[in-house]
Image 1 (cartoon, rainbow, N blue to C red):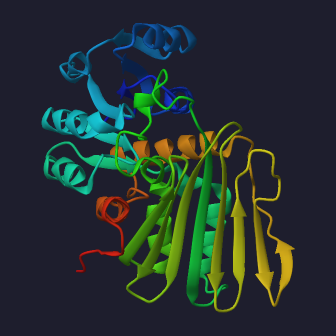
Image 2 (cartoon, rainbow, N blue to C red):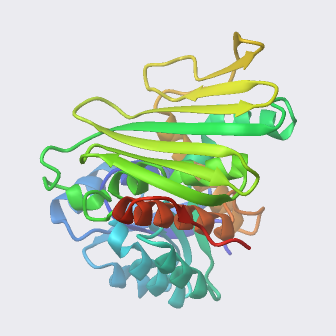
Length: 332
């Protein structure tokens, strides 16, 4: 793979601008070809980012260009599997924003399409500095045995839900809209912290709250909750409780205290190098890591088998929401 490459970006809605800013900063990227069917969105990004050398309506035009080595898919969720399979069959290296598909079955189709082109899943939550530090402390045994973890994500909501651009978000079209939209990172990290999920029981409170209780194979408990607020910015709060200590992890845009620990009931701030608009930072770091993998340097931060387990957990939560009661996940 050449040191400098051209990337095809599918989709111009937020956070496409964050992806483009990352490519501007990357020594690995020479140019971007943008595919977006909405003409006003396409031209708006084209005017803002000089790195975009070509902007088209049909992503097939990008796939037909042999000079494009990498495709970055962050289009509508329901179309990501179709786009990824077509790109992989065209021999492209594929980066897909998580959640990478509408279901685990769709993601398996994407994995099966790998050949000369490889599939990589971008999960920005893995690159939030406070989460990176929490993972480090857990791996070093500072928390003891992990017992319980929770993840609460509050996101702004469109009113009405079918307003302009609503199709670019997962809800309400899928049966697991809010959790799938805001908790893919939770489905990855809760299982990384606590072990693979064994069963899940999900509930909802109207259209604005969805929550899932998780039991892992090791007997630990997890919970992920997504809340659609009427207004405001995105805020996420996570708690990780071990036998010896616990952590509070936050990335509220207004909060400078992003990581703290509790030992014997005493709270202590834990310093991390935090940045404003941390999800933009995490997106940039995650994309840079994947570009290095594509260039032959290192392994992906999120292996595809782990990405699949997250989709299987979200599928099980969707089934629980529809049918009621706990749903067991396949073991093995």
